[in-house]
Length: 273
Ligand SMILES: C[S@@+](CC[C@H](N)C(=O)[O-])C[C@H]1O[C@@H](n2cnc3c(N)ncnc32)[C@H](O)[C@@H]1O
Image 1 (cartoon, protein in one colour):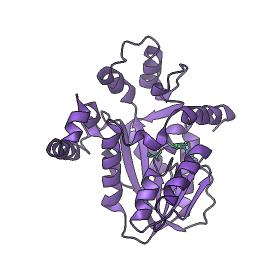
Image 2 (cartoon, protein in one colour):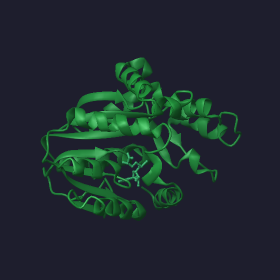
Image 3 (tube, protein in one colour):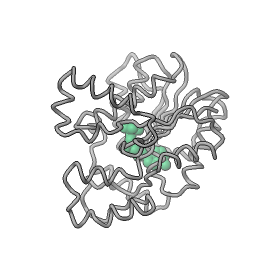
Image 4 (cartoon, helix red, strand yellow):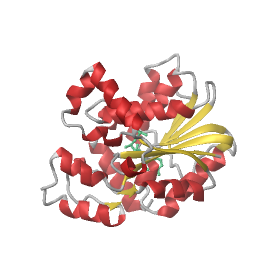
């Protein structure tokens, strides 16, 4: 990551409230589905998990509370402080560690982890070589048979987001969308944090090819939200337990449908060493 990209990342997350994000709007679907995709493959506790790009600790603290030994790293000091504070709030199940760091250079020894979560770094690293460095580092620290969960943002996310969430006609967004659709390189020259920050948006096949290039076997590639994040009146559906279950059931039903994968905001590739 260049100094400029790092500055941009710190600037973005200083404004954005990452600690609260997963409790609002369609991010709640991202949260529930990510948990589901983690639990689908994770071996029972106690095993060692590295959450690289763990943000404010939403998944790390949830997994620690389930009895896992969880180490969080993140390059944003504010996130690490938030994760440490969340860990203090669950004194019986604290994080094993929470440190400022970069997923491309883990301090952990070879073959010391059973699972690595990369739920952020692969879309923030805009150069393929940096994403491969991150995946190779996850491969290095995993024991043979260990698993990586690699989240990407869909190449088409800006298109569906702008159409369904009401900013398709913002002239400031038009060039952002055009470039996303051209080469997946997302840049936000506006001061509007809703338009995110420097990122790379994967086609589903690109994400799995990057795992293969880092010597992982690909176990699963699934849509995280599928088309569910586009639901009109999402909050009303999510607040109704029966409708929430229906929504989750249809997302599950189409999660691996190749023609639907790119509609999802996020895509999860799960690889095994
Ligand atoms: C949108 S947040 C997601 C946080 C959390 N993993 C989640 O899924 O809710 C993306 C995170 O990736 C982190 N990140 C970006 N580049 C990274 C890198 N090179 N190494 C580790 N983390 C990185 C950011 O600081 C941020 O906390």
